[in-house]
Image 1 (tube, rainbow, N blue to C red):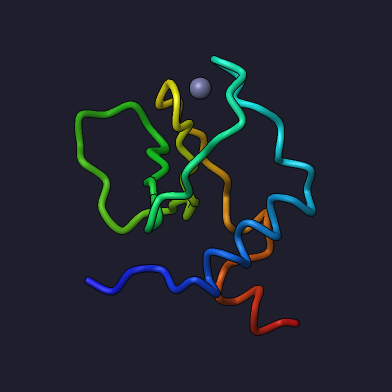
Image 2: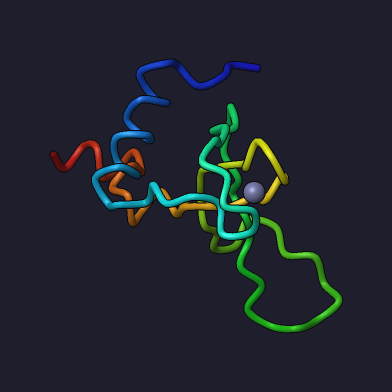
Length: 90
Ligand SMILES: [Zn+2]
């Protein structure tokens, strides 16, 4: 599996810094985090049915984990301007 390039990771870190998303962990106040080497792409389930939704709308995001308590935070790539289509517009 291909992983994120260091260039890709730097773009994410820069985007988070630019937005001021650099405060300590909201759970334990530690300032050390790890950017996971991949993306979440969570499906939006539009109705509460038992059916599994595949191929529906989703929220591609990056994952930041607190190095001390493991608190997981996610940031939507679209808001950070990091979706592939956003890159093409620039
Ligand atoms: Zn923490």
